[in-house]
Image 1: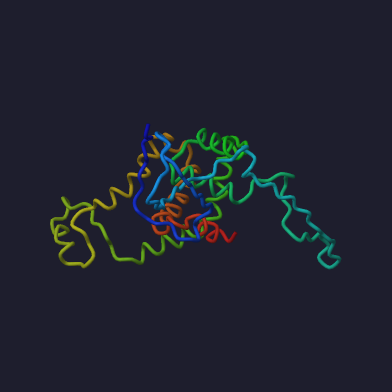
Image 2 (image 1 turned 90 degrees about the vertical axis):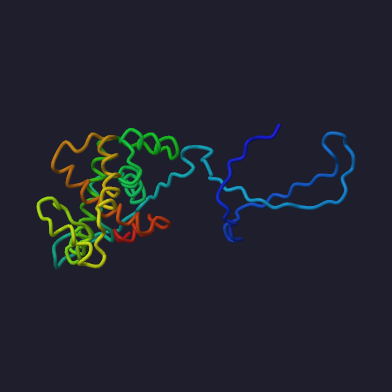
Length: 239
């Protein structure tokens, strides 16, 4: 019985991506046991992911021992590293993944908690997810302001209110780079429309502001550099 094969687009992996190599040999026919002749070889590549044998396999726990001393001039204690208010904190990679799962993948809080717990043995409450999203939005606010300034300095790419101003119909002819429709903008909004259907929107203005910052910065980054999204995201935060 031949098992169905899930085909992928042809992209031969470079030698540096190969993690394991398996050699399969055969001497005789598996049906009649006749010795085989005219031997030849065929090479194919199987791309897969590594699932954790135990959920805690991929979890990292870093212990920080921070030295501090008292400054007689400033009359205050000076630590080598900012000391958090709690003994256990959530690391930057978890915070980045939570934002990615919530904004890019449009997952609900419950789905995010299941993924982290099932794959990483990392329990996370929905309240902690809210705290993470708000904290990441604060860190990305400078990038958000730069993004808004960049948009303001660019030439317009879409024109609304055509029925109110008939001359606007000719904007796409008079200005280079202006499309005759706003289909691109409508498609860009679809991502947030689907997220709104899943999460039912934000209940507070604070939540709406948080989503505005995260969606603007992260979606812009993801659309531009999907292959190295996390590296660019971490660099944007200065981590």
